[in-house]
Amino acid sequence: MRKLWMAIGMAALLGPAAHAASEVNGVISVEAENYTSQSGYRRLANSGASGSAVMQVIGGSDSKLNFQIDVAQGGTWHVWIRTYATSAENNGLKLGLDGRGLGDVYLHKGSWSWQPEWSGTGSPITISLAAGQHVLWIQKRKVENPLIDKIVLTKSATAPSGYGPGSTGTSTNTPAPPTPSASLSIGPDAFVVPFDGASRRPILVTTATTSLTWTASTTANWITVTSGRGTGNGTVDFNVASNSGAFRSGMIRVSDGTFARTCAVYQLSGTNFPARANDFDGDGAADAATFAPTDGKWNCLYSGGGSDVFAYGWSTVKPVPADYDGDGKVDAAVYQPNGGGWYLRQSSAGNRTATFGWSSAVPVPADYDGDGVADLAVYDPDGGAWYFRYSTGRPDVSAKFGWWKSMIPVPADYDGDGKVDLAVYQPASRNWYCCARPTGYVVHRAWGWNGAIPVPGDYDGDGLADIAVYNRADAMWYIAYAAGGSLSYAFGWPEVIPAPADFDGDGATDLAVYHEAGGKWYALSSDTGATLTRTNGGAGKAPVLLNNVIRTWFDLP
Image (cartoon, rainbow, N blue to C red; front, side, top):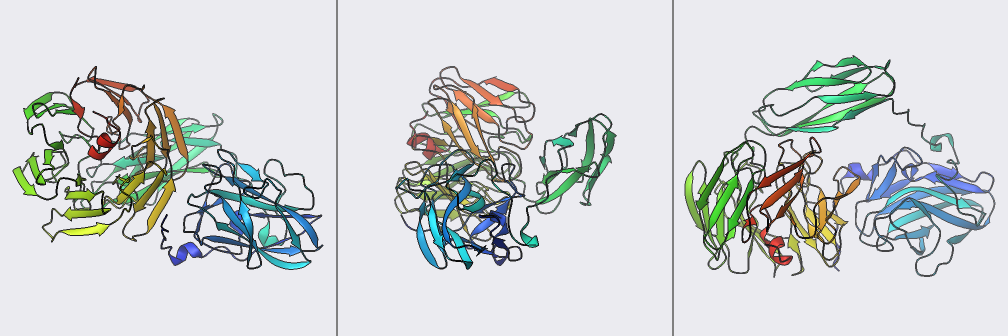
């Protein structure tokens, strides 16, 4: 497997002031975030951490955390590393001391645990240390990105329990103060608001006691808190000004004076406002739409009411709907592999045709330049190259991103900059690779398994596409949120196919499935939690929002 190198900005390489962990009563303990120096890691807040945060690998195989330790009494020491891994061994670590490698550490998966053994041996991790100062280091071993919470060295062979002993050493290396008790909570913790400021709802505030007084505030001049004070449970109402400029983000802070919660507010651009997936009528919510290759007919059941049936295509074409004229409505469109012909039924600019592609190319239209208009694009599975014809009329360009024929293109806006990013998923190795912009660095994560269907989407509505897979056998969804954390949820049954989109118009992708035999759609509203049911389809009618390569790869209708 070729190595992928991530370009990490200098800010990511700068850490806190140097710490030293000293021996106290035969124990050396240091929080991972209290490193002496690091490269290729990021600091993350985590509810499972013993201190204030954890460290996560985000760089290549040279990513390293360095810890200075002061040993008072030489001898044999047991090393314990508290970690969280998504799979065993594949995201193992290397352990080293004073410039030399000592061995590989096997990681257990699925929960916070103390790693007690060298990989492949079952032997405890022991090292010989002379009295004095040493540098203990942890380095990335394989492809995944585990979380690291704490490193503990003991003279005893008994593993630490719970969070382990408190940090030892100088005053600069003491444990972080305890987090204040959660006296209040809010929901949701993020909004995506259209450019006109509509389609929002209040923030719900829940307090631990009925006498707790709280206030809400914001520093964003385009957000106005209209009702931001209360005692006990209540709501925060706010207005958002219309946006005629670029995509922007702000924050609303709810505080009782000691403890605070924040709600992120993201507003789409008024100048480049692409239609949401499967939104044919431009009301901000996905529509239940199908295409029948036997007669080339489209059947659209609109979320706001009404429907439309029309013929546009024939048996040998593939549906490629997108907003090709930038009016905020998805256009019906088809791609003819034999000859690379595009046929676009634009809702405000009339029909258009173009030739761009060839028989083995995979159509992947999307807004790659962030101008609010979908670009013609194809992916070459043989060469791992992407080819673009931008809506702005710039010369055609290509980019190399992909290297195995077994990779599936999964483009989406993974970095939230309003531009769709190049991304591929390899089912056999369950690896995701994303070329995010404008920095151009490669984001890599293992998520899924061979047979799981990739279904990326913005499931939490924070403006960032999340990595996700769907297991058709047991109808389970597995989502790795871009902001951290994950979700597994059962929704569907083996006979349905995944069809996620924003069916309730709240800015977040909903879990959704389509049952071809019954022509029914089922969507789990991320706004209300209710199941939305629509009937539109039937045998031989496929949902048009499903990525064509995913449909072909997994033999879906």
